[in-house]
Image (cartoon, rainbow, N blue to C red):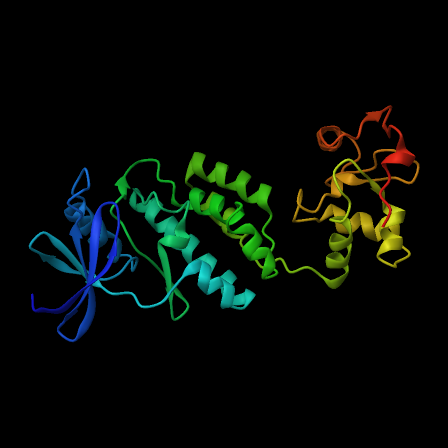
Amino acid sequence: MALTNKTYYAKGKRGIVYTADYNGKNVIVKEPNPNADVNTIEHEATILQLVNTQNIGPTYIGMENGALIAAFIDGMYIKEWIAHAPPKEIVVLLKKILAQCRVLDELGISKLEMTRPHKHIIVRANEPIQIDFDRATKTTKPKNVTQLCQWLTGSTMRPVLEAKGIFLPRQQLLDHAKTYKDTYTQEAYMQLAQLIEKKELSSFRKKVYDKLIQVPKGKVTTYKALAAACKIQSSQAIGQALKHNPCAPRVPCHRVVKTDGSIGGFNGHTTGKDIQRKIQLLHKEGVNITDGKVVDFAQKQHTF
C-alpha cells in the first residue's frame, strides 16, 4: 500500500494509532503496542471485516506489515456531540446505535465496550460510527444491547440526557433489557427499542419536580403543600405528576405524603410492594412510619 504522511495519533493498551494518507484518503494505521500482553491487530481486522458487511465500523482497507489500515473517522465523540445536538436528533442517534448493537448481537459479537461508548462511538454527519473492535469476541451471549441500556441509564449519561430534556424510563428500560438478554428475540428487542423515545417534561411537571428536589432527606411534604408551592389549586394534579415521574429517586416523590401524615401513594399504587418500597425509602432517610402515618409528622414537614 502507498501510505504517506504517517503521523502519530494516539496510544491505547493494545495498539498505537497513526494517521496517514492512502491514495488521497485519510486513514488510520493501527500497530500493536509492544507493551501489550497480546497482539490483537489481526483479530480486530477479522472482526472489522465482518461488521463492515452490516455497515458498522470504519471501512476496513487492509493489512500491511502487521498493521491494520482502516478509514479515518473525522467527527465528534458521542458525549460531546450530544452536548451540542437538539433532543430530537439525539433520540434518532440513540435508536441508530441501539439498532447497531442489535445487529452485533445477531452476529454473535460482543464488543465489550458498550459500557463506555462515549470513548468508542464517533458521530459524523449525524451517523454513529463504532470504533475499536480489538476487545470484541464471538459468543452465544452477546451484551451489546444490554450494556448500552446500562450506559444510557447510568450515572454518566442519565444527567446528560436529562439536561437535554430526554427522560428515559430507567427501571422499565433495565427490566426490558433483562428480558431481552434472556431471549434475544425480535419481539423483546422491539419492546426495548420503543422505550428509547424523547420524554420531554411539560412546564407544569418541571415546576413540580424543581420544587420537590428542595425537600431534603429526613423531611417530607404533602400533596397540598407542594401544590401551594407551585401556585396551583389541585393536589390531584400533583399526584398525577408524581405518578409519571421519570427522574426518581433523584426527584424524590417518595417524600410526598397526605395532609394528615398518612403514607399516600407511590408509583400509582396505594397498597402492595410499591407502598412497602416507599416506607423503606423513607425509613432509610430517618422518617419512620407507624400504622401508615409519619411519626412526628409536624417536625418532619419541610417548609418551602
